[in-house]
Image (cartoon, rainbow, N blue to C red; front, side, top):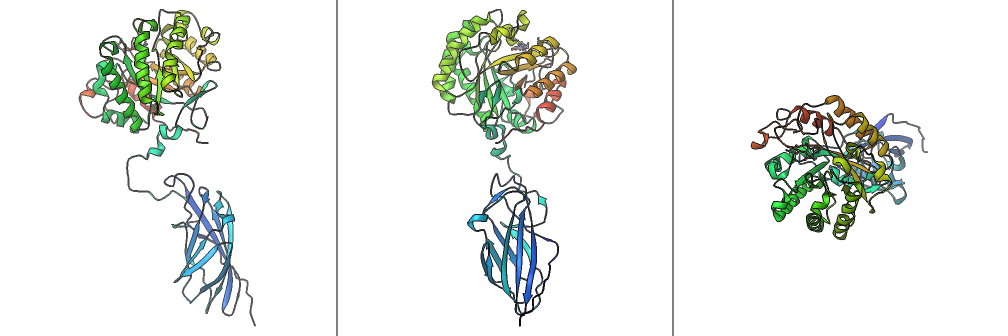
Length: 461
Ligand code: IDC
């Protein structure tokens, strides 16, 4: 005659649960098992096994545990595919309980034969990980280079303009924060593996703007050479998971139409060469000045189709009147653009500022314009518009807070060791090979690095 005993195995036994959904190296794992002997009789017992997933969702799981000493054998089980080898019992999910969301449970059970008492099994594992009954970090692998899956580029993928925002591959607004080169014709020695490693890994920069001056010993003196230099900097940014802005750095003369033919040949070349990359943003005219919005728009409507013909899906930034001040530095404002926008899709408008020179009235304009126009701060400085002078901390912080709040992307002038207040590195830094730590930074560099290196929070669904 069978004796039925209700016996409770107390407590939550730890069961390891490895996430199979999402990046395995990242997923939090955790689970518990409630093991209950629901009845027992001479020569046998029945046990309930409740698995609760405390970690990331899983799709597909295997539970293992050891039968305790005493000759216990699995007879038959339910709600899983059960087997036993030696003392190890294995239960694989069945189709309908394959997926376990965070917090979800699966109730399994089995009948066992036994010649003695039925102590609780030990060493529950799920998908190979030991259960702790709480959420734990996944096992750490030996240190390696940061996984490519974590980079701003890998997370966000191909960008596009949606409404007034820059959006990622999930059509969610994002803000990119990063640095601009100085003129690559003068400071090329600052852009190498060591400095780009520091920018990506220490500064955690999302963005690397390549300022290719057209005049001042720039592109016009060697189109093929500058085109190739820009392309290799794009590759270096891409290899480190950063976006790159290809800046056709017109400045003097201020009418971009002066360089229209150069712009067409430069952009047809870089757009064809980089069409399949996801990290490229084109900036077609750095800072138009002394020229009407109508003339700038006319230039844009000739250059943009050249880029689109080769690279149809890239975001393009159009400079604005008055040194890309949306016209404010010329006594105008954004309404000239709002009322007469460039006839093209997937474009943004540049706004540039220098914190010691451009303050409240410029910030007011940006606050107002940001709900009407997609804006990209492709260049700004913490100092005066000359690129030199003292850092204006209060104004810089007010600006950066505003840009963060509005999710406006930005690049700071400059990631260089130029002997001027806007440079991030102390003079002479680029003569060496050390760009890390705080000893190489200027006041501006330290301030901007502290802002750029904070964690990004890019939406992924
Ligand atoms: C400045 C450089 C400076 C250089 C000058 C002329 O910092 O070393 O001598 O250009 O080429 C801009 C321009 C940017 C300027 C910067 C600071 O886009 O080229 O760089 N600035 O004056 N617009 C507003 C300020």
